[in-house]
Image (cartoon, rainbow, N blue to C red; front, side, top):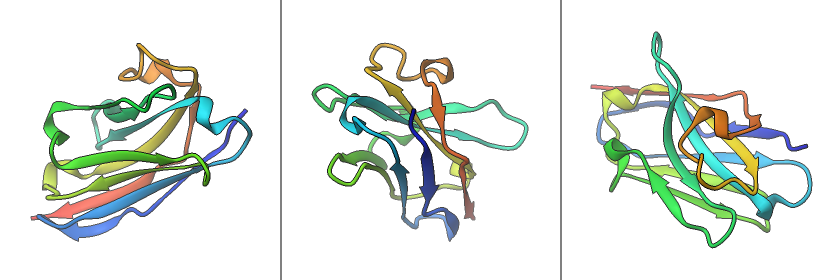
Length: 125
């Protein structure tokens, strides 16, 4: 069992940066594949980025490649999403997700058992 708490969202102008954090409780954090998803009003929740538990490989949705960076600090049981060059279309609620020993389903909502409550990111033009 793991509990996830996101923080770091806010209202920023286009071109700005934000860093989201997701703090996890529970044991064996290093055994969890961690992901970031987002959901805009009226849209389905979509994959943003993931970092795999074994080896630390990272994956990104095409529209955020080169702008967003996912990272983890296993000593702090925390993952981060550094978001640069933000665009209005990045506006959404951002969710952190976890799956023990997750691998091939990292880009799918159904691939995660644990979710945070979400943090709002609003990018004005």
